[in-house]
Image 1 (cartoon, rainbow, N blue to C red):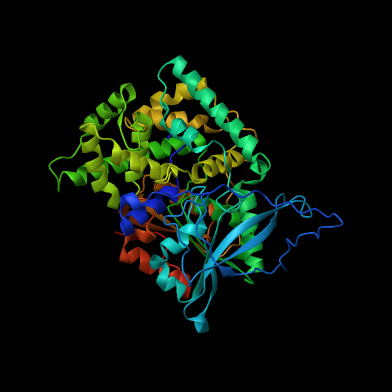
Image 2: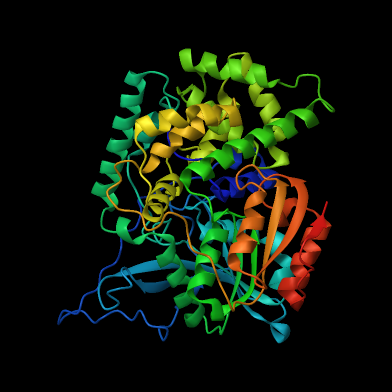
Length: 521
């Protein structure tokens, strides 16, 4: 990746679960078509005003195959269990009778309707991941929850079929992600700044109409409209990674409408972009150390951190062949290494990919990096990273200069020799962005809300464990209930740990709130 932050979410985590299901080469996100655009309906004589109220009716019907902007893991519809609909929402909530935006939704009805609780709405993070493609792909993980809930997810505004943000073309993105993301000279810094500016200009050109409206606050308002149109008194919610931030903002805006809510793989709401990126650098470094420690117990060809660093420095000077005529650069290799740390199930791929790269074969690390960036085997990109960029910059008010970033590089290098430079320079992501950000940090205080179960994983690279405690504290006394999982990978519910799954299921299905501070290992 070039200058994009590592996803605190499962644009990558979802892909990592798909690798468990079907193998690496079939797991990369597929893209096939152009994005949709925001649908505008004014009050002209020949056009009725679109209904964006809670009285609108959802027209559920068979789901189409994933679009290119969604980047589905297979080019086929999800099957008869699933139905799709479109929610119509105001593009700008301060002008509710103005233009509108379509929000793509998907659901599978509860299998035990006699004991149905309601709808359970999922957000799998990113920001930028398509819930419409992710939920059916991993629905087996939620079979028990489906007995009493309709499983529901959606593409948030600016993602996938919900007017997915588009910026550069596929060939341009190949070059963008391959470019030097860790500049060590003034000339390279200027080149990075120029690339970021060109990217922002392209986003404004192709998606400028919706860029001011794709932030988390508007997505939370969409979820409340969704709740009402689904006929639910409360929002029952399952948020993963960035989805925990979205859930926290929802709880702040609508504390009296929170039902049973789970936050898994928790974003630290108190961190500004510097603190967040530094936390990720430390988190991925921790995960890398855990990987190397585990590797030597089962393999004779485990890399050392020195060897990984040497490989990255060699790739910066001389990239190696990947696939399809593309080269594996340092930036792409760093993204591939990070991708493999989202799940223990990727660790064998990392060992193999590093060994191959050491021998001049960059194909495996390039495939891992492509998964991180939302590139399909056909060479086409989903909206994953462009949506991530747009939502991040619509939220975060901070804009960093190269001088500011350069001054922080030593601290980042101390946090991680492998990921430090990469994460430091990702702070330029929103420099020159055409839309101002909303906040320094999100407000997730939710006094009066029902208990929210907050699950932190001690080995989580993308959303470090400390974020769970801080989220629970910020939600407020009696609201945030923290559960600790002593494990590895991003998130906890899908880790296979029976203790975590049992506690979460008991809460969501029976309303049994675990004791605060419960530990699962």
